[in-house]
Length: 252
Image (tube, rainbow, N blue to C red; front, side, top):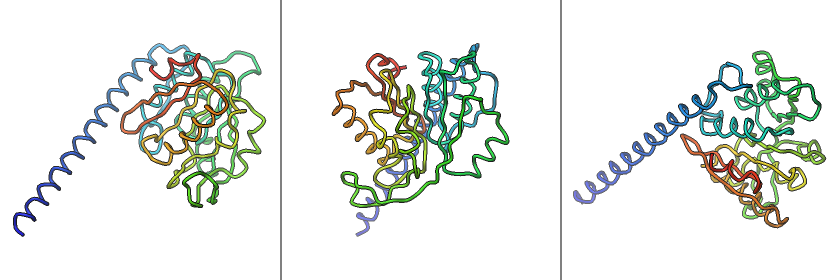
């Protein structure tokens, strides 16, 4: 009995050490991405100095780096962002840099009106940025392996965006669900995508986001739409899908 207890304690010690090492590696990787992001935006022609607060519920540095490179390198004209936050500042700043043209537009979907009020009081969004309030609802959805469980999603999302096309879709909202998270994009695929496109999904280390992207990839394959995929990892993981002509966005 004594030996068994000692073995169990030893296993727990090893498990705790492994968790500490894993967390340390993630933090060090995040710091590396912070330096890469900082170096990348130096001398940017369009990104003005501003306050950014990466991490926790917001995008981390790997995601901000990937987003900046996509904006800077391929110049998307039509952008759909799910979840108001730090990425909104970056995209809105990008939109402010565009000259006198009506071809560029940025939609931001958010379910928390209090957060919208606070954000717009503290940050001047671009005239090309439109914040769309859609309530978040819990609803059982008929998705493979979901077993009738509730999924938190935006009410009225499909009606609001089914007639629009986008070069860039960033998925960082609403809050996650158990089996599938942030499923709204499924209702507007593939007609919502322009020929050249990129899809960014944050919190890709979570099973719910992975399951949703499995469906997205299956839908693209069913429609014969070629794409590539890549991961940007720090404290969190960000997934990127891109059309074949934008393949390099997955390996920045």
